[in-house]
Each structure stands twice: as C-alpha cells, then as structure tokens.
Picture 1 (cartoon, rainbow, N blue to C red):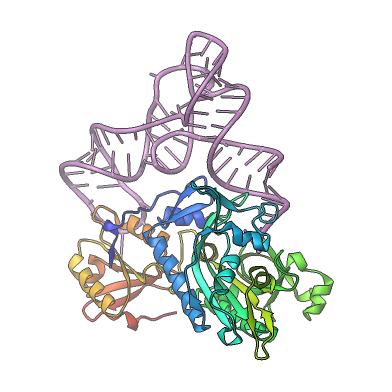
Picture 2 (tube, chains in turn orange, blue):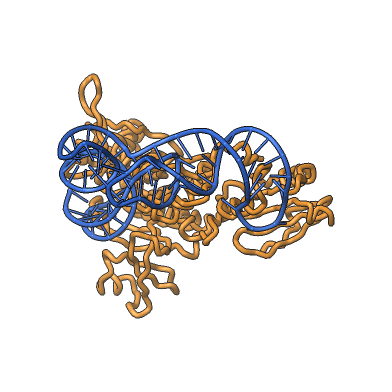
Length: 418
RNA sequence: CGGGCCAUAGUGUAACGGUAGCACGAGACCUUUGGGAGGUUUUAGUUCCAGUUCAAAUCUGGAUGGCCCGACCA
C-alpha cells in the first residue's frame, strides 16, 4: 500500500505548456515522469511502476520463447563497430560518442548487434551451441535531430532488444514467426491488441528483405499505414505499391489509411553481423558457416506513451489493469480512516495493490480529480455517506457504473466486472 | 539539419520603454470537507551575454533552451 501523503510527487492542476503531446502532458501532470530536457525523461515512482509492469510482461513472453536475458554494456568499443562499418558518422549519424581521458574514443550504445555478436564468438563454435535467443532491457542513446511526441521519441530510452542466432534460414524463419506471435501477445496483454497491426515495411539499411513493424492505431502516431481490418494486416506507406499489395494478396479497395505508432519491430539481419564479427559455427558435416541472425525490438517508453495516447479521456489517463501502477485507488473521506484500513487489509489479502489517498488537507473534489488523472482501474471511496449504510463504493475508471459493496464483508472479487 | 513560433515565481499567466501583478502551489493560523473550498498572513520570478536609452521584462544583436512543421529515424 502506498499512501499518497508519502508520495514525493504531486499532481498539477494544469498541463505543462511546453508539451503538446497528450502522453507527456498527462504523464507530467499526474506525476509519472519529469522532463530533464528535450527527449530525456525521468521516471518517477508511479511511472516507474508502470514501466516495470510493462517490462515484466515483455520478460515473461521472451522467456516463454526460450530466450535468455543478459545485460550488455552502455559503453561500446569502437573497434567492434569499425568491423561492421557502423562507427563512421556518415553511416550512423545519431551516435553519441565520447573520449576516454586516457586516450581513444568510446561509443554510447545506440543498439547492440555488434557487441552481442562479438560476445558470442567466445561461446559458439558448433551447431550444438545453436540456436540461441538472447535479449536484454537496456538504455539506448540516440542523438535524434529532433525529439518529439513526449516519451514516444526520445534521445535516451529503454529498449527490449532480442537477437536470434540460427543455423539455417528455416530455423530462423520459424523463430521469427514465433516471435511475431509473442509480440502480438505482449500488445494484447497491454490492451492494445485490437488496435495493433503487424505491418509490412521496407527493409531498413540493415537488410534487403522484408521487415515487420507492429503499429498501434492512433491519431498521434508518426507513421502512416494502410490496414485491412478483415485480415488484420497492414502495409506501411513506405512500401504501399500495387506490387506489394498484389504480393500480399490484398485488395486496395478494402484498405484504409491510418496514422499509427510503431510499438515494435522485428527484422532479419541475415549473416551481415556474423560475417563482420566472425561468428561462425561448424555444422554436422564439419563445414564452417556464418550464423543467421534476427533482431526484435520494443521501446518501453514508446509503448507506455502509446497506451496513454490510446486510452486517455478528457479527465486523465486510463491504465489497462495489466500495467496500472496500482490496482485500486482508495479514497478516504470524512475521516473514515478506520473503515478504510479494514478495506485496504481485505484488498491486500486478495493480492490487490493499493494506492491510498489519505491526504487530510485535500477536498473530496480534488481527490476525485486526482484519481481520474492518475487513472488507476478501480476507485474505492470510503466516506460517511456509504459507511453509515455499511457500504463502500467502487467505480471503474474506464467508465463502469458505481457499485456498492458491503463494508464488513468486503470482497473485491464479488465485483461485477463489465 | 532547413523553416516557423516562443522564453516572466515550483505551475499557469499579466504588465505602453517608467513601481514586475494575479491565480494555483508551498509555509503558518482559523473555518471547511462528495467533483480541484474560504479568510488572514508569509514565500518565490523577468534564461544568459552584449547594445540602444536618463530608464529595458518590454527595443536591437548574439547565445542557450523549449514546442511545432519538414527532412532524418540502423
């Protein structure tokens, strides 16, 4: 149980004027994040809880794929990047680089293909060592020319990046599809399933073949895609040509243009990095071959921002239960602390995480306004009005009706979920 | 990186080239308590550097920072 009187953050009455994006306005106003500078945001206690919930959902799905979690370094050895030709600013222009006092340069991680591939040369030599699926949650630094859209396009951000190391094209493709399914599951668990489309996109400068993006429909998105709602398939505007449409067996007449947020992407890397870093294995016949790789990314901040954009109403944020900072927002009025303590005890016994608005100097109206702004799924009010009738009221933030539950036999599970 | 707009207290906003004011917040005391309460009182500010001027928040130049559009986005 977290007492609001003990939270060091506060809600604000007004949104910051220098933020235009809805996600940043609401998250700052409600005290989830703080802007350090353009494109750089601190996660405050409430925001960090959401962040960790998102991280845990992703971790569960990655582990279910059989992937192993590591933590690679932020400081990067230029020598590795020179091998792949990506140290040059002309090739990758958004590097943050620094100098060592003792001489020489270091890179500040913007992605991890090179170091991870190089790392595996120390552990992989036989077909028996493969396949491998390795992921991490790590801060990426990208010197974006223009940060924008609140926490959805920043210069420093936490990313889950997974890399696959396969022996054959078939083995790679099989995992690629499994991972695509895992990604959809992640977005579904976060409540974004119905709005998120696997989207065909152009191969980046990495690749020549296909790549897949996961795009969540939202007017605030940077991307434009064409969706087929029936087939649940989309094509990024970049490659929306008659040829692609035909290739995918789609019909231009049933496709609609939408703005969307790229919440994840997956793409084949082929053998580019394996060859550059010398990551090879011997197959059953003793032939030496390069490892076939794939890369799979999800930006956690962007995902959190997307959820805010998609679900917020004019009163504030509406968190899906799966990632909400707390499950229940308990508001005490009229000095009914004793009855509230009982309710909280019952909630916690049922495994419900509680944010408790115990602030004595705040009016009922302000507490309600804050509860709406913060957006926790369930609001439970303990006040004179209902306690006198041996009841407490429960209301769903997403708009359900107010329900009354008995005070002395309070059972959260008896709620009528809608 | 090209273009546009902008910069006053913790937040949101006023002020003709002439006394920096209001609201919220925060502190103190009192009264309140179901949708951002009231009174008394206290607190805190002109982004920075030059220039013009008797006088600059205000005009000029530069720097820095922020937002937006575009380009970019491994």
